[in-house]
Length: 218
Ligand code: SF4
Image (cartoon, rainbow, N blue to C red; front, side):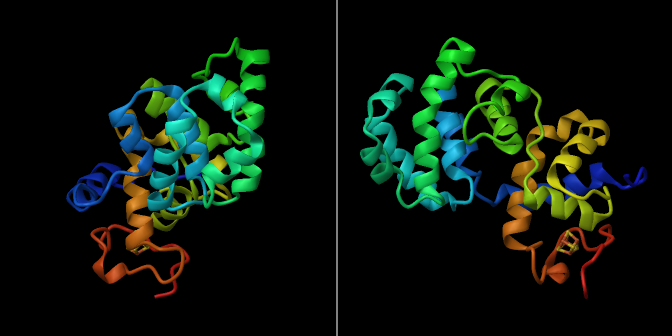
C-alpha cells in the first residue's frame, strides 16, 4: 500500500543540499574509483553490518592480496579471516567468500552476473547486496532497500510495508526511475544522522513539514 499524493520530488529536492555535505557510502566510493564487479561485490558483502571506516580499511588491506576470483580461491581460509577482521560476522563472511569462486564457476562460467535473481544465488548475497552490485558495478537500474530505506519510507507515510523486500517491490512500482540510484545513499545518510531508528531528530529534519512521522512518538 502507498500514498499516491506523497510529494516525492519535493522530498528529494529538500534532501539534496543535506546529502551533498555527506560522504558517499563506501561501495559507491569504490564504484567511482574502480568499476571492477569483483571488487564491488566483495566490498558490498563485507560492508554489510559494518561501518564505512572499518570496511574501507579492510578492503584496502584485502585487495592488496586478493585481487580477483582466482586469488580468492587460492588464499588460505585462515589468512582470509585475518584479512577481513574486524568486519561484522567476519568468520561467516570468510566461509561465504571461500565458496564464491566455485559457485561462480559452476553456475555462471566464472563471471559475476548482473541480474538480481542470479546475484542472490551467490553466497552472502541478499537482495540489498544484489541491487547494490547491479547498480554500482553494471550501471543497471536497481533499488537498494535496507533497514534505513524501509524505515524512513514508512515513517514518511509514502509506503506501508512490513519488511525491506516488500518495500523494494513496491518502490519498483511507484518510485520514479530518476530517484532509483539515489534513494539508498540519501536515506542511509538521513537514517544514520537524523532519522535514526530510535529518537529521530524531527526538529532538525529538512522533511519535518511533509513527513507523516508514522509511529514516531513525538
Ligand atoms: S521528520 Fe522525523 S520521522 Fe520524518 S524523516 Fe525527518 S526525522 Fe524521520
